Structure formats: structure tokens, C-alpha cells
Image 1: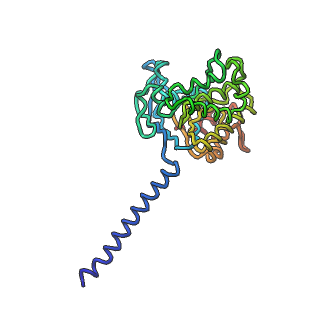
Image 2: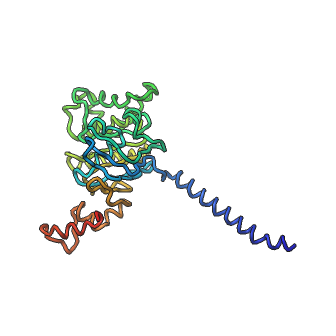
Image 3: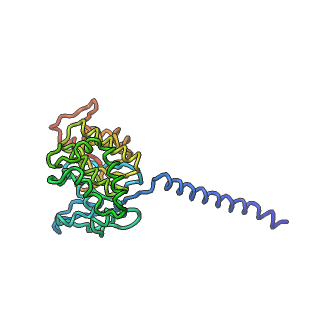
Amino acid sequence: MGNRAGGGPLIRLQLKVLRDMANIVHAEGAAAAAGQAPVLSINNIEVIYDHVILVLKGVSLDVPQGGITALLGANGAGKTTTLKAVSNLLKAERGQVTKGSITFKGERVDTLNPNDLVRRGCIQVMEGRHCFGHLSVEENLLTGAFTRKDGQAAIANDLEMVYNYFPRLRERRNSQAGYTSGGEQQMCAIGRALMSKPTTILLDEPSMGLAPQLVEEIFEIVKALNDNEGVSFLLAEQNTNIALRYAKYGYILENGRVVMDGEAQALRDNEDVKEFYLGVSGENRRSFRNVKAYKRRKRWLA
């Protein structure tokens, strides 16, 4: 009887521990089911060009499954280099990842060829659009399906899907891509990427050189693709204002380092981000000549 009575509290404690462990496992499973696990992880990478120029220094970031993640910063901060490190395009520019690792869907991919990464579902839309100017819009779109082996019917269905998201491309399908507008070429470049059936798109400076109304239209399409097709986006953009309106999470690069990250709304509300990236100053707006105060304010670089 004494042993049984003494064992009661111990058994209850063991049951409580088991319940707590089950709750933790359930919470982790729920988080993964909710799409919170990263589809793309960049882990402390360093990138060097020409064996001497250090461009990225310990950059780490995650892109969640089904999310839109913004990579922000001024021109030359390292945004494009980060995307090219993921898509394995650095070698063409005599660059290489010398430290760290990049994983996509849990598999290390920084040693793959670019076409192998596309087959796994990750593709980059380059800055400046880079359409094949001598081909028609539809021929450009079909070049995006060159890695696919699921048949002409599936490709035709996806071509129709692209035209549904980009009605303007349907109207210009037989036009030579080189004679279309900048906005139409940007749509063509995104549509071409969609034809490879990606799960993740690396989108580099989609707003560059476009009128504000076209930028808004393209970002609305990106949001629709994310909501309806479940495509994840890593979005490199100088236009911080619009990027943080559509992204769920953001990272800010300065001189090849991630200096700040957080939920998009938190970044939009941050006073430093407002002043240095959104062009909004508080009541105590300083003179542009006060460079020392400017540098002190950028305390994250310390």
C-alpha cells in the first residue's frame, strides 16, 4: 500500500511530462502544416568575386513555404548577389560562395547547376527582364517549360493559366517581345518563370524602370500567385514602400550584411526604416548636412 501511495505522484508527474511532450510535437506539426517551415534557407553565406572582393558577409535568411519575403536595401547592398548565390549563377560572373550553405526543401543546393535547381522548383527572374527580343511573347513563355517532362497538355494548361494572370500577354502573344513595353516584358519574364512550375520564385527588382501603376499591377499579380497557386517569393527590391506592403517578412541588407529583419508591418513602423528607406521623417527632422547624426542613427551597423 505504501509503495502504491508513494507511486501516485510520480505517475502523475510522468503523465504530465508525456502530455507536455505530446503538446510540443503537436505544436511543431501544426506549425509545419501551416506552412511555417522554410522552403529556402540561406545559412551564414559569404560570397567573393574574383577571389578577392568580399560582397556578402554572413548573410542568413529564411523563406517560408507559401510566403512572400522581401530582401531590401540600396543599390549595391548585395540583394542581386544573394539571389544569384541561391540560383547558382555566380560562376558566370567569377563569383563563388566560400562559406555557409543554402538549402531548398531540406536539400543543400549551392553546389547544383542552375538547371538542376529549376527542376527542383526554384527559379530566378533576373533584374532587367532579359526576354528573348527576337522571339514572340508566346515563344518566350514556352522556353520556360524546357525542363518539363509532363507532356504538351500540361504545358498548354499552364500557358492558359499564365494568360489568365496576365491578360495583356494574351493580346500580345504573337508580338515580338523586343518591341513590347517594359511592363509587358516584366510580365513575360514572370510568366516564363511560371511555365517551369516553380514552388519558389526569386524576383529581382520587378519595379525597376516601370510606371507606378504598372508596378502596382505586377505586385497584385505576385500576391494573387502567392494566394492562389501557393508560390513562395523571395523579392529583392529597392522600392521598400511597396515591397513591405505585399511581403509578410523582410530583411534589410547594408554593405553585404543583414542589418535588420522582422515582420513587414514592424519594419514599416520602425523609425529608422521610415527615415532611411521610406523617406518619412518625424517632427525632429534633421538637416541633410548633419552627416554625423545620420551615422549615429544607423545604430544597427555598430
